[in-house]
Length: 281
Image (cartoon, rainbow, N blue to C red; front, side):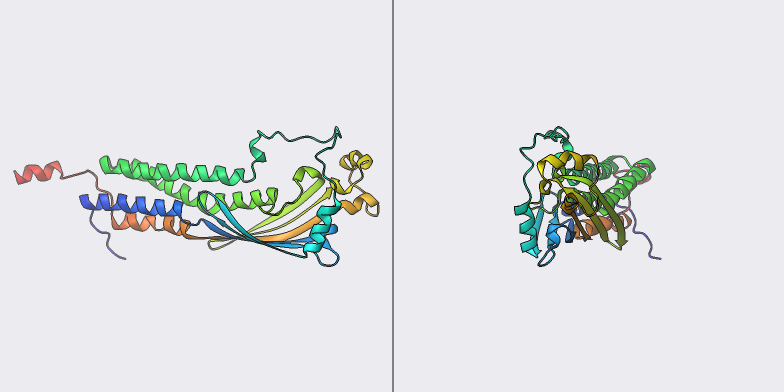
């Protein structure tokens, strides 16, 4: 086992500087690379001639999500969108109009909230380091460790889950699918898997597209799920897919922090000890 280096005054400043660099790099670099694959398994988007499938790559950082999207079987997907009727002009009393001021209507509100939590945790981590330069002790080191663990868990767990749920609720940015309020009797299922620093989600979803149902039948469909074999049951839309979230530079930078703590340990006091001054005099 390697001996731990001795604590020095210069080492304290070096440690804080390296911490600042690592945390800045973790926030400024790419957070995750997301691979998204979804295939329609029921309804008009499932074909003919071919089932529509959406393949997308998301790059998530501290501010935005960048996406590249490819749609196979676009004929079936486009036929569905052109066949369905918009519900914007509905006067059906059973339809609830969402409040635009509600936080949940934001396309990526979970991810945005998680970003704010991450920034707060990194600020707390840096604050602990700054306080340790002036006053060092076991309580501060314990609090610093708590902030580091919370920061890593936020990046490793909370951010991928936020991405997955936001994509499940809002679909893929750039693909103009009908809003979720246009569907009734929706159901879905997700299964989560961790593979090292990768995060896999397998999911499936189904619901009845009210835009494919004649106006007089919509209230009845909202009240009761259509029976198999009836014309209204043909409005059922279903898809399944996979979401792979692979960590990029941000998490790796955070995992280097304990190495910095080991190489540049904390001193009990800043400057020269009083006992050393008395001996020298």
